[in-house]
Image 1 (cartoon, rainbow, N blue to C red):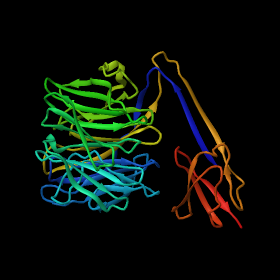
Image 2 (image 1 turned 180 degrees about the vertical axis):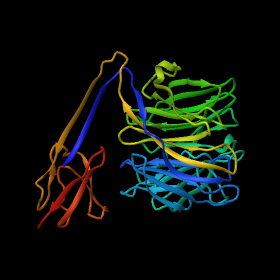
Image 3 (image 1 turned 45 degrees about the vertical axis):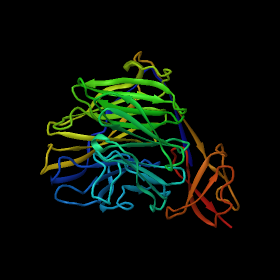
Amino acid sequence: MLVKQFIILVLLSFTWASWTPRKLIANYPNWNNWWLNTRIGSDQFDTIYCAVARYNYSQNDPEHDLYILNNQGDTVRKITPWHGYEYQPIVQDIENNNIYLSQPTIGYSLSGNYHMDWGVTDDSNQIHTSRGASGDGVYFTKLAADGSRIFWNVKIYDGDPWSGKTCLAIDRRNYLYITWGDDVQYLVCAKSTDRGLTWKIDTLWDERVLSQPKIVSDTGNNLHIVWRTWTTGCQLHYMKLRADGNYAVGNSIFASGAETWDPQIEIDQDNNIHIVYTTAASNNQNIYYTVITGNLDKNGEPASDSELTVIRDTLIQYDAIGLAYPKITIDCQQRPHVIFEQGQYGCNTDKAVYHIRGDVAPSIKQDKILCQNIKKTTKAIPNPFIRNTRIVGYEDDDFSIYNLSGKKVGVCQGARIGDALPAGVFFLKAKTWHSQSIRLVKIR
């Protein structure tokens, strides 16, 4: 039996009333570097992946440790050491979809064993990655679905991406976008409409001093960019570009303070942009979380903080010993998962990695809410079946078929399932919405 859930919320505002208690992922005693270098990712089955780079001053190692978490934040498996594909932090879900673990603290390591800053997967399961090298330009790498090299470390820009960080996004047309802060002054974006073969590079903003830009694409192929400036105090900025490249929302400030460091962002299915950041580069004790809407269109004019903000800047973690470098991903139920490191800043100190998850609690300023949770039960008819079966009410939906060992053996639509299957027991799972599995039995 499949249960498809529709949740309809009519709200004027909402807040995250609670976050789960922090859960320990890993300890690294006497770590010989200023920080741990963590990465995060998730798949369509709400599996959370955390990778920790193994290299430091005394251990010149290009590999990672990989921790696989369930959606409660419990570690269900660890692989130590883990080398991914060609030392790239790439995982595969149970359908063999490639997922590049991104949001690193620092992207590069040994010469020839570069860990890229960011990575995305296109509709052919090929992997596109970007890397910035301080004073030495921006590089692009493309890997085939099996991890073999198509383009390797190709320079696409001769400049100085200060702090050596880039960010990469892909839209539903498979257009690629790479952003970086050049010479701590220019917000630069490179665009490729041919899957990385050629690039067009534009400067979107000019302000000294800026860095750490992040970019995501939404369901309408619009681009959302968040970055940091620190001329007088520190500010977090936002900009939105339409799919045609024109500005929808101009440069807008949505957070400011004495320090806002290294924002990481993720976008959900409703085009809300979830952001985590710390309030200091070193000796930090706070992690903040905020959400801004990606659905505004101001015809290129800036938006006010009140227009943008869905969830105001919220302190979600405090630790007197020290916190650093939060990373964020969103699961299929629209919940944010955050990993972060804890420990004193500096070398030869104990470091730890933790996980927390936000749990939604809708509320409204006028204390009035309409919340409807509709469950529709579906079934395969007939089941067992001889030739084929169908999923009543979901004939146009796409489904994946798995055998008893969990191997994917087919893809079909709900109107006609099973013609190509041998006799046996199989499991069916919807491809485009979160579901339980349905057990199918085909007989002769």
